[in-house]
Image 1 (cartoon, helix red, strand yellow):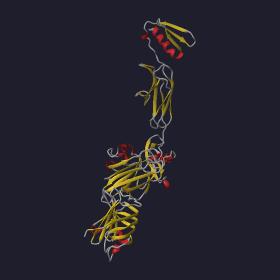
Image 2: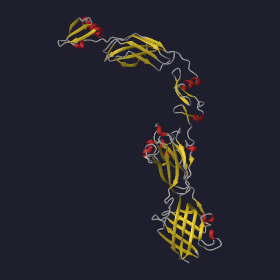
Image 3: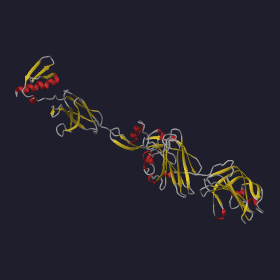
Image 4: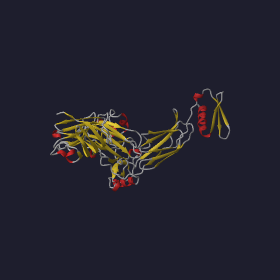
Length: 487
Protein backbone atom coordinates (compact mmCIF):
# COMPACT_ATOMS: atom_id res chain seq x y z
CA UNK A 1 0.00 0.00 0.00
CA UNK A 2 2.82 2.38 0.75
CA UNK A 3 4.30 1.75 -2.70
CA UNK A 4 0.89 2.13 -4.36
CA UNK A 5 0.33 5.45 -2.64
CA UNK A 6 3.70 6.58 -3.88
CA UNK A 7 2.76 5.46 -7.36
CA UNK A 8 -0.52 7.32 -7.10
CA UNK A 9 1.35 10.44 -6.21
CA UNK A 10 3.63 10.20 -9.19
CA UNK A 11 0.91 9.09 -11.59
CA UNK A 12 -1.22 12.01 -10.55
CA UNK A 13 1.72 14.37 -10.75
CA UNK A 14 2.58 13.29 -14.27
CA UNK A 15 -0.50 15.14 -15.53
CA UNK A 16 1.11 18.34 -14.30
CA UNK A 17 4.84 17.86 -14.04
CA UNK A 18 5.99 15.42 -16.67
CA UNK A 19 5.39 12.37 -18.89
CA UNK A 20 4.90 8.66 -18.33
CA UNK A 21 5.98 5.62 -20.37
CA UNK A 22 5.41 1.88 -19.92
CA UNK A 23 7.86 -0.59 -21.50
CA UNK A 24 7.40 -4.26 -22.45
CA UNK A 25 8.80 -5.45 -19.07
CA UNK A 26 5.91 -3.79 -17.19
CA UNK A 27 8.17 -1.05 -15.98
CA UNK A 28 6.78 2.45 -15.48
CA UNK A 29 9.05 5.39 -16.09
CA UNK A 30 7.96 8.79 -14.82
CA UNK A 31 9.94 11.51 -16.55
CA UNK A 32 9.87 14.72 -14.62
CA UNK A 33 10.20 18.11 -16.21
CA UNK A 34 13.82 18.36 -15.03
CA UNK A 35 14.68 15.38 -17.26
CA UNK A 36 15.18 12.81 -14.49
CA UNK A 37 13.23 9.55 -14.50
CA UNK A 38 11.90 7.27 -11.80
CA UNK A 39 11.43 3.56 -12.59
CA UNK A 40 8.74 1.30 -11.09
CA UNK A 41 8.26 -2.43 -11.60
CA UNK A 42 4.60 -3.55 -11.43
CA UNK A 43 2.92 -6.88 -11.86
CA UNK A 44 -0.56 -5.72 -12.78
CA UNK A 45 -1.20 -2.45 -14.57
CA UNK A 46 -4.91 -2.62 -13.65
CA UNK A 47 -4.00 -2.13 -10.03
CA UNK A 48 -2.85 1.42 -10.68
CA UNK A 49 -5.38 4.06 -9.65
CA UNK A 50 -5.24 7.22 -11.79
CA UNK A 51 -6.18 10.37 -9.89
CA UNK A 52 -7.51 13.29 -11.99
CA UNK A 53 -6.40 16.73 -10.86
CA UNK A 54 -9.34 18.92 -9.83
CA UNK A 55 -10.18 22.22 -11.54
CA UNK A 56 -9.34 25.20 -9.32
CA UNK A 57 -9.70 28.98 -9.07
CA UNK A 58 -13.45 28.79 -9.75
CA UNK A 59 -15.05 32.26 -9.88
CA UNK A 60 -18.68 33.39 -10.31
CA UNK A 61 -19.64 36.85 -11.57
CA UNK A 62 -23.18 38.20 -12.06
CA UNK A 63 -23.59 39.35 -15.68
CA UNK A 64 -27.21 40.57 -15.46
CA UNK A 65 -30.47 40.03 -13.66
CA UNK A 66 -30.75 36.62 -15.29
CA UNK A 67 -27.18 35.38 -15.87
CA UNK A 68 -24.05 34.41 -13.87
CA UNK A 69 -20.75 33.72 -15.65
CA UNK A 70 -18.43 31.02 -14.30
CA UNK A 71 -14.71 30.52 -15.06
CA UNK A 72 -11.99 28.22 -13.67
CA UNK A 73 -8.51 26.89 -14.30
CA UNK A 74 -8.53 23.51 -15.99
CA UNK A 75 -5.88 21.42 -14.24
CA UNK A 76 -5.84 18.43 -16.58
CA UNK A 77 -5.42 17.52 -20.23
CA UNK A 78 -6.71 14.00 -19.90
CA UNK A 79 -10.31 14.43 -18.73
CA UNK A 80 -13.32 13.36 -20.78
CA UNK A 81 -15.41 16.25 -19.48
CA UNK A 82 -16.15 18.87 -16.87
CA UNK A 83 -19.37 18.91 -14.87
CA UNK A 84 -20.88 21.99 -13.26
CA UNK A 85 -23.02 21.71 -10.14
CA UNK A 86 -25.34 24.27 -8.55
CA UNK A 87 -26.68 24.67 -5.01
CA UNK A 88 -29.09 27.23 -3.63
CA UNK A 89 -27.18 27.48 -0.34
CA UNK A 90 -23.67 26.10 -0.96
CA UNK A 91 -24.15 23.14 1.35
CA UNK A 92 -27.05 20.97 0.20
CA UNK A 93 -29.23 20.46 -2.86
CA UNK A 94 -26.36 20.18 -5.32
CA UNK A 95 -27.49 19.34 -8.86
CA UNK A 96 -25.72 18.99 -12.16
CA UNK A 97 -26.57 21.87 -14.53
CA UNK A 98 -24.03 21.30 -17.32
CA UNK A 99 -21.75 18.64 -18.81
CA UNK A 100 -18.97 20.29 -20.79
CA UNK A 101 -15.95 19.24 -22.82
CA UNK A 102 -12.83 18.18 -20.93
CA UNK A 103 -11.07 21.36 -22.05
CA UNK A 104 -13.82 23.74 -20.87
CA UNK A 105 -12.86 26.68 -18.66
CA UNK A 106 -16.12 28.68 -18.53
CA UNK A 107 -19.92 28.45 -18.44
CA UNK A 108 -22.86 30.88 -18.48
CA UNK A 109 -25.78 30.04 -16.20
CA UNK A 110 -28.86 31.76 -17.69
CA UNK A 111 -32.59 31.95 -17.02
CA UNK A 112 -32.18 33.21 -13.47
CA UNK A 113 -34.24 35.85 -11.71
CA UNK A 114 -32.94 39.11 -10.30
CA UNK A 115 -31.47 39.12 -6.77
CA UNK A 116 -30.85 35.35 -6.70
CA UNK A 117 -27.72 33.99 -4.97
CA UNK A 118 -26.29 30.83 -6.54
CA UNK A 119 -23.43 28.54 -5.44
CA UNK A 120 -21.30 26.50 -7.85
CA UNK A 121 -18.58 23.83 -7.91
CA UNK A 122 -17.01 21.88 -10.77
CA UNK A 123 -15.11 18.63 -11.21
CA UNK A 124 -13.39 16.68 -13.99
CA UNK A 125 -14.15 13.10 -14.99
CA UNK A 126 -12.58 10.34 -17.08
CA UNK A 127 -15.04 7.46 -17.49
CA UNK A 128 -16.02 6.53 -13.93
CA UNK A 129 -12.97 8.20 -12.46
CA UNK A 130 -13.81 11.64 -11.02
CA UNK A 131 -11.54 14.35 -9.70
CA UNK A 132 -12.21 16.05 -6.41
CA UNK A 133 -14.37 19.18 -6.44
CA UNK A 134 -13.08 22.64 -7.08
CA UNK A 135 -13.58 25.38 -4.58
CA UNK A 136 -17.17 26.68 -4.15
CA UNK A 137 -17.90 30.06 -5.74
CA UNK A 138 -21.05 32.14 -5.53
CA UNK A 139 -22.63 35.24 -7.04
CA UNK A 140 -25.92 37.11 -6.82
CA UNK A 141 -27.77 38.24 -9.95
CA UNK A 142 -28.42 41.95 -10.17
CA UNK A 143 -31.80 43.34 -9.25
CA UNK A 144 -33.97 45.13 -11.81
CA UNK A 145 -36.93 47.52 -11.86
CA UNK A 146 -39.17 46.40 -14.74
CA UNK A 147 -39.84 49.07 -17.36
CA UNK A 148 -43.36 50.33 -18.00
CA UNK A 149 -45.27 49.25 -21.11
CA UNK A 150 -44.59 52.66 -22.66
CA UNK A 151 -40.86 52.31 -21.96
CA UNK A 152 -40.97 48.80 -23.40
CA UNK A 153 -42.55 50.08 -26.63
CA UNK A 154 -40.02 52.90 -26.91
CA UNK A 155 -37.16 50.42 -26.51
CA UNK A 156 -38.72 48.07 -29.09
CA UNK A 157 -39.09 50.99 -31.52
CA UNK A 158 -35.35 51.50 -31.21
CA UNK A 159 -34.99 47.92 -32.43
CA UNK A 160 -37.25 48.52 -35.46
CA UNK A 161 -40.48 47.14 -34.00
CA UNK A 162 -42.78 50.16 -33.93
CA UNK A 163 -46.36 48.89 -33.79
CA UNK A 164 -48.78 46.12 -32.96
CA UNK A 165 -48.57 43.38 -30.37
CA UNK A 166 -44.95 42.68 -29.48
CA UNK A 167 -43.62 39.73 -27.47
CA UNK A 168 -40.02 40.11 -26.27
CA UNK A 169 -37.87 40.15 -23.08
CA UNK A 170 -38.20 43.32 -21.03
CA UNK A 171 -35.24 45.20 -19.57
CA UNK A 172 -35.06 42.62 -16.78
CA UNK A 173 -34.93 39.68 -19.20
CA UNK A 174 -38.51 38.58 -18.51
CA UNK A 175 -40.57 37.86 -21.63
CA UNK A 176 -43.74 39.94 -21.85
CA UNK A 177 -46.39 40.81 -24.44
CA UNK A 178 -47.44 44.43 -24.97
CA UNK A 179 -49.82 46.05 -27.46
CA UNK A 180 -47.79 49.01 -28.68
CA UNK A 181 -50.66 50.32 -30.82
CA UNK A 182 -50.54 51.80 -34.30
CA UNK A 183 -49.99 55.50 -33.61
CA UNK A 184 -46.62 55.29 -35.40
CA UNK A 185 -48.35 54.24 -38.62
CA UNK A 186 -49.64 57.22 -40.59
CA UNK A 187 -50.01 58.45 -44.16
CA UNK A 188 -48.97 56.08 -46.90
CA UNK A 189 -47.79 53.54 -44.32
CA UNK A 190 -50.84 53.58 -42.10
CA UNK A 191 -51.12 49.82 -41.63
CA UNK A 192 -49.26 47.77 -39.03
CA UNK A 193 -47.87 44.49 -40.34
CA UNK A 194 -48.20 42.29 -37.25
CA UNK A 195 -45.72 39.72 -38.62
CA UNK A 196 -42.89 42.29 -38.57
CA UNK A 197 -44.31 44.97 -36.24
CA UNK A 198 -43.57 47.58 -38.90
CA UNK A 199 -45.72 50.19 -40.65
CA UNK A 200 -46.55 49.39 -44.26
CA UNK A 201 -49.02 50.44 -46.91
CA UNK A 202 -52.56 49.32 -46.00
CA UNK A 203 -53.81 46.10 -47.61
CA UNK A 204 -55.95 46.39 -50.75
CA UNK A 205 -59.69 46.93 -50.19
CA UNK A 206 -60.34 43.36 -51.39
CA UNK A 207 -57.70 41.80 -49.15
CA UNK A 208 -60.46 39.77 -47.44
CA UNK A 209 -63.75 38.25 -48.53
CA UNK A 210 -65.66 41.07 -46.87
CA UNK A 211 -64.20 43.46 -49.44
CA UNK A 212 -64.46 41.22 -52.51
CA UNK A 213 -64.76 43.34 -55.66
CA UNK A 214 -67.53 42.36 -58.10
CA UNK A 215 -66.33 41.92 -61.69
CA UNK A 216 -68.44 42.83 -64.72
CA UNK A 217 -68.05 41.07 -68.05
CA UNK A 218 -65.61 42.55 -70.55
CA UNK A 219 -64.43 45.16 -68.04
CA UNK A 220 -60.71 44.97 -67.20
CA UNK A 221 -59.83 45.84 -63.60
CA UNK A 222 -56.37 46.75 -62.30
CA UNK A 223 -55.49 45.11 -58.97
CA UNK A 224 -52.56 44.57 -56.61
CA UNK A 225 -51.38 42.16 -53.93
CA UNK A 226 -48.92 44.68 -52.47
CA UNK A 227 -49.42 44.69 -48.66
CA UNK A 228 -52.06 41.95 -48.97
CA UNK A 229 -52.08 39.16 -46.40
CA UNK A 230 -52.20 35.39 -46.82
CA UNK A 231 -55.59 34.25 -45.56
CA UNK A 232 -57.16 31.60 -47.78
CA UNK A 233 -54.90 29.87 -50.33
CA UNK A 234 -53.24 27.50 -47.87
CA UNK A 235 -56.51 25.61 -47.45
CA UNK A 236 -57.11 24.71 -51.11
CA UNK A 237 -58.47 21.22 -51.61
CA UNK A 238 -56.01 18.86 -53.24
CA UNK A 239 -58.75 17.67 -55.59
CA UNK A 240 -59.01 21.20 -57.00
CA UNK A 241 -55.39 21.37 -58.09
CA UNK A 242 -52.62 19.41 -56.41
CA UNK A 243 -49.85 21.92 -57.09
CA UNK A 244 -51.90 24.84 -55.80
CA UNK A 245 -52.62 22.85 -52.66
CA UNK A 246 -48.96 23.07 -51.77
CA UNK A 247 -48.03 26.46 -53.19
CA UNK A 248 -51.02 28.83 -52.96
CA UNK A 249 -49.89 30.17 -49.58
CA UNK A 250 -48.85 33.69 -50.48
CA UNK A 251 -50.88 36.91 -50.13
CA UNK A 252 -54.09 37.07 -52.14
CA UNK A 253 -56.95 39.42 -53.04
CA UNK A 254 -60.57 38.46 -53.71
CA UNK A 255 -63.05 39.18 -56.51
CA UNK A 256 -66.56 37.90 -57.20
CA UNK A 257 -68.49 37.20 -60.39
CA UNK A 258 -72.16 36.24 -60.78
CA UNK A 259 -73.10 35.30 -64.37
CA UNK A 260 -76.57 36.17 -65.64
CA UNK A 261 -76.60 33.31 -68.13
CA UNK A 262 -75.22 29.80 -68.06
CA UNK A 263 -72.27 29.54 -70.42
CA UNK A 264 -68.51 29.27 -70.50
CA UNK A 265 -66.42 32.16 -69.19
CA UNK A 266 -62.71 32.92 -69.15
CA UNK A 267 -60.95 34.66 -66.26
CA UNK A 268 -57.61 36.12 -67.29
CA UNK A 269 -54.95 37.65 -65.03
CA UNK A 270 -52.08 39.51 -66.68
CA UNK A 271 -49.34 40.20 -64.06
CA UNK A 272 -46.75 42.94 -63.92
CA UNK A 273 -43.09 42.11 -64.43
CA UNK A 274 -41.67 40.07 -61.55
CA UNK A 275 -45.02 39.02 -60.09
CA UNK A 276 -45.78 35.28 -59.85
CA UNK A 277 -49.55 34.89 -59.39
CA UNK A 278 -51.68 31.82 -58.87
CA UNK A 279 -55.37 31.90 -59.81
CA UNK A 280 -58.18 29.91 -58.25
CA UNK A 281 -61.98 30.00 -58.12
CA UNK A 282 -64.42 28.77 -55.49
CA UNK A 283 -68.16 28.59 -54.98
CA UNK A 284 -70.11 28.36 -51.75
CA UNK A 285 -68.83 30.53 -48.91
CA UNK A 286 -66.00 32.91 -49.71
CA UNK A 287 -62.59 31.93 -48.37
CA UNK A 288 -63.40 28.23 -48.09
CA UNK A 289 -60.58 26.50 -49.94
CA UNK A 290 -62.44 23.19 -49.80
CA UNK A 291 -64.98 24.79 -52.19
CA UNK A 292 -62.26 25.42 -54.77
CA UNK A 293 -63.48 24.31 -58.20
CA UNK A 294 -60.78 25.59 -60.54
CA UNK A 295 -57.13 26.57 -60.08
CA UNK A 296 -54.15 27.20 -62.32
CA UNK A 297 -50.49 28.11 -61.93
CA UNK A 298 -48.56 28.76 -65.13
CA UNK A 299 -45.32 28.85 -63.12
CA UNK A 300 -42.67 31.54 -63.06
CA UNK A 301 -42.98 35.30 -62.88
CA UNK A 302 -44.82 37.57 -65.33
CA UNK A 303 -46.82 34.68 -66.86
CA UNK A 304 -50.53 35.08 -67.65
CA UNK A 305 -52.91 32.93 -65.57
CA UNK A 306 -56.19 31.95 -67.23
CA UNK A 307 -59.13 29.74 -66.31
CA UNK A 308 -62.11 28.84 -68.52
CA UNK A 309 -65.09 27.47 -66.59
CA UNK A 310 -68.76 26.67 -67.07
CA UNK A 311 -70.68 29.34 -65.21
CA UNK A 312 -74.19 28.75 -63.91
CA UNK A 313 -76.58 31.69 -64.04
CA UNK A 314 -77.18 33.20 -60.59
CA UNK A 315 -74.24 31.40 -58.93
CA UNK A 316 -71.60 33.59 -57.31
CA UNK A 317 -68.02 32.58 -58.01
CA UNK A 318 -65.17 33.89 -55.86
CA UNK A 319 -61.97 34.56 -57.78
CA UNK A 320 -58.67 34.69 -55.88
CA UNK A 321 -55.53 36.25 -57.31
CA UNK A 322 -53.07 34.43 -55.08
CA UNK A 323 -49.29 34.14 -54.99
CA UNK A 324 -47.05 31.13 -55.46
CA UNK A 325 -44.56 32.10 -52.75
CA UNK A 326 -45.02 32.99 -49.09
CA UNK A 327 -41.76 34.90 -48.76
CA UNK A 328 -40.16 35.74 -52.14
CA UNK A 329 -40.41 39.25 -53.56
CA UNK A 330 -42.47 37.78 -56.43
CA UNK A 331 -45.42 37.33 -54.05
CA UNK A 332 -46.30 41.01 -54.49
CA UNK A 333 -47.26 42.74 -57.71
CA UNK A 334 -49.92 44.47 -59.78
CA UNK A 335 -52.08 42.88 -62.44
CA UNK A 336 -55.09 43.27 -64.72
CA UNK A 337 -58.02 40.89 -64.32
CA UNK A 338 -60.93 40.46 -66.74
CA UNK A 339 -63.85 38.06 -67.18
CA UNK A 340 -65.06 37.40 -70.71
CA UNK A 341 -67.66 35.04 -72.11
CA UNK A 342 -66.30 32.30 -74.33
CA UNK A 343 -67.57 33.31 -77.78
CA UNK A 344 -67.56 30.92 -80.72
CA UNK A 345 -68.63 33.61 -83.17
CA UNK A 346 -65.93 35.69 -84.77
CA UNK A 347 -65.49 39.16 -83.28
CA UNK A 348 -65.37 40.43 -86.87
CA UNK A 349 -66.04 38.37 -89.99
CA UNK A 350 -64.63 41.16 -92.15
CA UNK A 351 -65.67 40.98 -95.80
CA UNK A 352 -67.37 37.64 -96.25
CA UNK A 353 -69.25 35.70 -98.93
CA UNK A 354 -71.89 33.19 -97.77
CA UNK A 355 -71.20 29.54 -98.63
CA UNK A 356 -74.90 28.67 -98.82
CA UNK A 357 -78.22 30.56 -98.83
CA UNK A 358 -81.99 30.31 -99.03
CA UNK A 359 -84.95 32.71 -98.92
CA UNK A 360 -88.65 32.14 -98.27
CA UNK A 361 -91.67 34.40 -98.63
CA UNK A 362 -94.67 34.26 -96.32
CA UNK A 363 -97.55 36.55 -97.38
CA UNK A 364 -95.03 39.14 -98.56
CA UNK A 365 -92.69 38.83 -95.57
CA UNK A 366 -89.26 37.60 -96.68
CA UNK A 367 -86.75 35.62 -94.61
CA UNK A 368 -83.31 34.80 -95.99
CA UNK A 369 -80.64 32.63 -94.36
CA UNK A 370 -76.93 32.88 -95.27
CA UNK A 371 -74.43 30.31 -94.02
CA UNK A 372 -71.10 31.99 -93.22
CA UNK A 373 -68.79 29.03 -92.47
CA UNK A 374 -68.53 25.35 -91.70
CA UNK A 375 -69.04 26.08 -87.99
CA UNK A 376 -72.70 26.72 -88.72
CA UNK A 377 -72.64 30.50 -88.07
CA UNK A 378 -75.52 32.02 -90.03
CA UNK A 379 -76.94 35.47 -90.81
CA UNK A 380 -80.70 35.92 -91.16
CA UNK A 381 -82.20 38.88 -93.00
CA UNK A 382 -85.87 39.12 -92.03
CA UNK A 383 -88.11 41.64 -93.79
CA UNK A 384 -91.59 42.30 -92.35
CA UNK A 385 -94.41 44.28 -93.98
CA UNK A 386 -95.74 47.30 -92.09
CA UNK A 387 -93.06 47.09 -89.35
CA UNK A 388 -90.04 49.23 -88.56
CA UNK A 389 -88.69 50.91 -91.72
CA UNK A 390 -91.59 49.41 -93.67
CA UNK A 391 -94.29 50.83 -91.40
CA UNK A 392 -97.31 51.82 -93.48
CA UNK A 393 -96.28 49.75 -96.48
CA UNK A 394 -94.79 46.59 -97.90
CA UNK A 395 -91.24 45.29 -98.00
CA UNK A 396 -89.30 47.30 -100.59
CA UNK A 397 -85.83 47.98 -101.94
CA UNK A 398 -83.62 50.76 -100.62
CA UNK A 399 -80.84 51.45 -98.10
CA UNK A 400 -81.88 51.23 -94.47
CA UNK A 401 -79.96 52.25 -91.34
CA UNK A 402 -80.00 49.60 -88.66
CA UNK A 403 -80.94 51.92 -85.82
CA UNK A 404 -83.98 52.76 -83.73
CA UNK A 405 -86.76 50.21 -84.23
CA UNK A 406 -84.44 48.00 -86.28
CA UNK A 407 -82.34 47.02 -83.27
CA UNK A 408 -85.30 45.74 -81.24
CA UNK A 409 -86.62 42.42 -82.51
CA UNK A 410 -90.21 43.15 -81.49
CA UNK A 411 -90.35 46.32 -83.65
CA UNK A 412 -87.86 45.84 -86.49
CA UNK A 413 -89.00 45.71 -90.12
CA UNK A 414 -85.51 45.10 -91.53
CA UNK A 415 -84.17 42.65 -88.94
CA UNK A 416 -80.61 41.38 -89.26
CA UNK A 417 -79.72 38.52 -86.94
CA UNK A 418 -76.63 36.35 -86.38
CA UNK A 419 -76.80 32.80 -85.05
CA UNK A 420 -73.84 31.01 -83.46
CA UNK A 421 -73.45 27.52 -84.90
CA UNK A 422 -73.85 24.65 -82.47
CA UNK A 423 -75.44 26.77 -79.75
CA UNK A 424 -78.65 28.60 -78.89
CA UNK A 425 -76.98 32.01 -78.82
CA UNK A 426 -78.34 34.59 -81.19
CA UNK A 427 -77.35 38.16 -81.94
CA UNK A 428 -79.17 41.23 -83.25
CA UNK A 429 -77.72 44.06 -85.32
CA UNK A 430 -76.99 47.25 -83.40
CA UNK A 431 -75.64 49.38 -86.22
CA UNK A 432 -74.65 49.53 -89.89
CA UNK A 433 -76.73 49.55 -93.08
CA UNK A 434 -78.76 47.08 -95.12
CA UNK A 435 -79.10 47.74 -98.85
CA UNK A 436 -81.79 45.81 -100.71
CA UNK A 437 -81.64 45.81 -104.52
CA UNK A 438 -84.21 43.05 -105.05
CA UNK A 439 -86.96 41.68 -102.83
CA UNK A 440 -88.95 39.89 -105.53
CA UNK A 441 -87.78 36.76 -107.31
CA UNK A 442 -84.37 37.06 -105.67
CA UNK A 443 -83.32 38.46 -102.34
CA UNK A 444 -80.31 40.56 -103.26
CA UNK A 445 -78.37 43.22 -101.44
CA UNK A 446 -75.43 44.14 -99.21
CA UNK A 447 -74.66 44.41 -95.50
CA UNK A 448 -72.17 47.15 -94.62
CA UNK A 449 -70.38 47.73 -91.28
CA UNK A 450 -72.98 45.81 -89.33
CA UNK A 451 -72.34 45.28 -85.60
CA UNK A 452 -74.04 42.62 -83.49
CA UNK A 453 -74.70 42.11 -79.81
CA UNK A 454 -75.77 38.90 -78.08
CA UNK A 455 -79.42 39.02 -77.03
CA UNK A 456 -82.10 36.95 -75.40
CA UNK A 457 -85.58 36.97 -76.91
CA UNK A 458 -88.58 36.68 -74.61
CA UNK A 459 -92.29 36.38 -75.24
CA UNK A 460 -93.62 39.07 -77.53
CA UNK A 461 -90.30 38.91 -79.41
CA UNK A 462 -88.74 41.43 -77.01
CA UNK A 463 -84.98 41.28 -77.36
CA UNK A 464 -82.66 42.14 -74.46
CA UNK A 465 -78.86 42.47 -74.75
CA UNK A 466 -76.97 39.97 -72.58
CA UNK A 467 -74.89 41.93 -70.03
CA UNK A 468 -71.29 41.44 -71.03
CA UNK A 469 -72.36 39.09 -73.79
CA UNK A 470 -70.47 38.28 -76.96
CA UNK A 471 -70.28 40.73 -79.84
CA UNK A 472 -69.52 40.39 -83.53
CA UNK A 473 -69.36 42.38 -86.74
CA UNK A 474 -69.46 42.10 -90.54
CA UNK A 475 -67.57 44.66 -92.58
CA UNK A 476 -69.26 43.72 -95.85
CA UNK A 477 -71.39 40.88 -97.15
CA UNK A 478 -73.07 40.74 -100.57
CA UNK A 479 -75.89 38.26 -100.98
CA UNK A 480 -78.30 37.00 -103.63
CA UNK A 481 -80.53 33.96 -103.52
CA UNK A 482 -83.85 32.94 -105.11
CA UNK A 483 -86.99 33.53 -103.07
CA UNK A 484 -89.31 30.55 -102.66
CA UNK A 485 -92.91 31.59 -102.07
CA UNK A 486 -94.24 29.39 -99.31
CA UNK A 487 -97.70 30.96 -99.15
